[in-house]
Length: 232
Ligand SMILES: O=C(CO)[C@@H](O)[C@H](O)COP(=O)(O)O
Image (tube, rainbow, N blue to C red; front, side):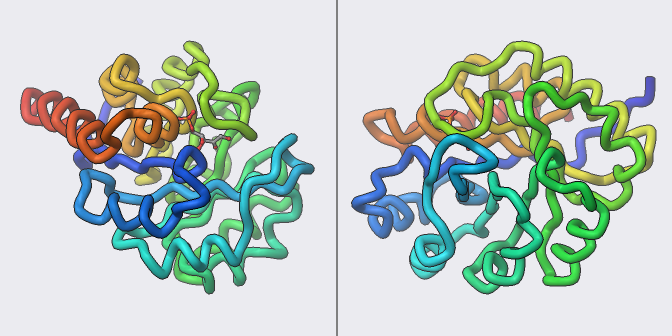
């Protein structure tokens, strides 16, 4: 088993899926000075996942008020048809699903050509090893720690092991891809996930259902800083 030093302080990416959709400008603006590094935006089509969230016009609107880069997670079929529009709406990173892309290599190249960080997401039942032959071509792997489609679900414990396996696979392949964990992330599982290899933590309901989301993000950041400074 290979090990590699942690490359970055882990990033926090609150998921706007759990924000108040009737007040997205205010929700986005109040995160401006917060500990959020990226804003995670979930686009769902009601086909790849059994839910519909929002699409390109809402993404554009979020982008107009956002101070942080938009990390866009496409839970849609045929994502290749929407990459240009998603980039033009303000995405800094675009993540597509492994399960939705029979031509994943091509799609990742298309995302990079648009100047975006190219990510691939794995559903909970999809093993890490499927990325063996594409590890060099991906900038980020999003490990779904809930079944995609809904916020507020419980973290699937097996994900922790998958993050560790993925970390080993990427390290062995010489890949610099970030590992993102998405779903059910909270103050209990944050540090174990980082210790297993997570670089980006997406948290929706834990942040937005808190009385003060900005303070909650600051608490998560303090936890991460504590772990990181203890390790260095
Ligand atoms: O992609 C998804 C759900 O499909 C996630 O981004 C969730 O929105 C995370 O929310 P919580 O599980 O933290 O509520």
